Image 1 (cartoon, rainbow, N blue to C red):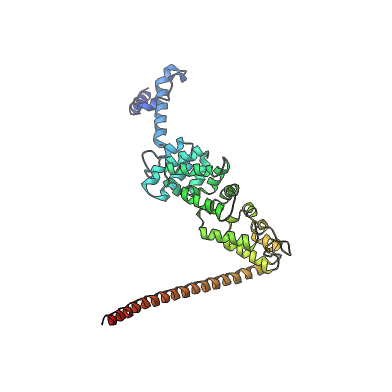
Image 2 (image 1 turned 90 degrees about the vertical axis):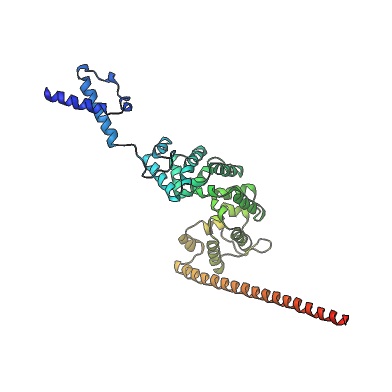
Length: 347
């Protein structure tokens, strides 16, 4: 009896130290034995308080901002591990602006229709997206919609290549204008190119033009086939290497002015959209050793061409400088001679 009284006193003292909010979840109606209610109630409160003390709310080691915390991310639908990964992605970009912008960024991405798993993948690929302002992010998404990217295609493209949301609207407009004017793409072909090859918005326009002209004039491929095989996913070196290998083996011909050839050229899709082994064996009908040797020789040729081109440019620059110096000397000497002639006439 003395032991029970002692236990009750200890438990009552413990309950007095429990916060008021701890009592809220406890309902007295759940207990059916009134004579044991004080002791059982005290035991439950003691255990509940111990659980809250031993398992605190997960918190990140760093303080991002008053609004950004694991609790706020959990409330948005992320799991605890996902919330921690987002915090890590935010810290990767470093700076207070990332913490301030991340909640607004997440809001825009959720409004776009992405789920927590997709958002996590997106931020893991492109953590610098957290630094983009909400207004800029929304403007870029709206601009992509205006270009014809419908629901479903837009979301898949953003998840596949989230870096496109870091590109200013004017830069995207310049690429779109280039595709329409220089490459003569239709509006639908431009939309399909952005959807299937979004990295094109960050490609150098000079290299983009050279790639298009090479495939159009040297290979005789039209715009529709370029878009269908997703040409702009491949580098210029990849295209030139495979085309040159086929050409030197007599398996590809440049069409004449009428677009005709004496052989049937393989389709661009079968040249580019196959792995290396299939291209060499099925399309080029060669061995892997032959293709390896050809790649090395071709790389040497390209290097020699670059050196020759750079030496020609350097020589032309030197000639221009010499011509400029000669013109300046002629102007100076001509001015002095004219001055002397005038002086003699005055005499």
